[in-house]
Image: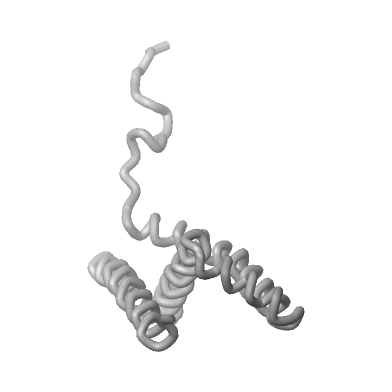
Length: 130
């Protein structure tokens, strides 16, 4: 019996993740994050229905650093999931499935996520800042 020092299967220390694999995993993670973030939206609506004091407390929470980080993360997750979902719809038509198109799509999703997130936050700060 021969002893070999190589691993039987690749593990995380030696395996290089392709960007398309990371994008697929991130798509699933952002889907879960959007579901959890929806609870934040429900909390905001419940506070609004509960009265001005509850709403003011919730708004104070959202205006804090933690609240803004949560909202920013939810916004990034929303736009990443949207852009990547549109790419999946495009793939469902049988187009852009070659390696070069997949790589271009990866870049387009990342750029689209960044541009849409910055645009949404820029719009929000210019129109609703105090």
